[in-house]
Image (cartoon, rainbow, N blue to C red; front, side, top):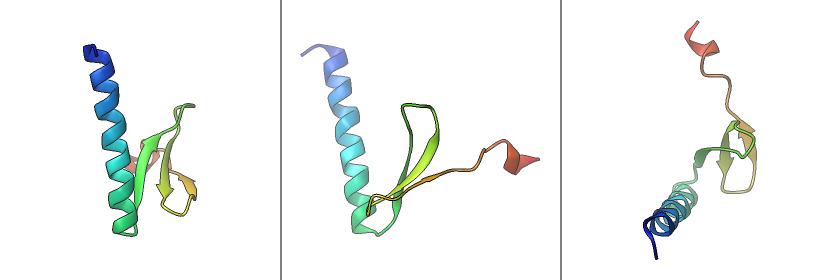
Length: 58
């Protein structure tokens, strides 16, 4: 494997671990979608968009 394949593997494993932790603690993970939107993803499959972070600081 080259360095990029190793990095992609570690990133995927980190995301999988975050999902397991969220399920065990009955919480959610936050991630960026392919469209660039930041969302909360609950372990039951619900996906909730996060409000624009710039608006909360005004």
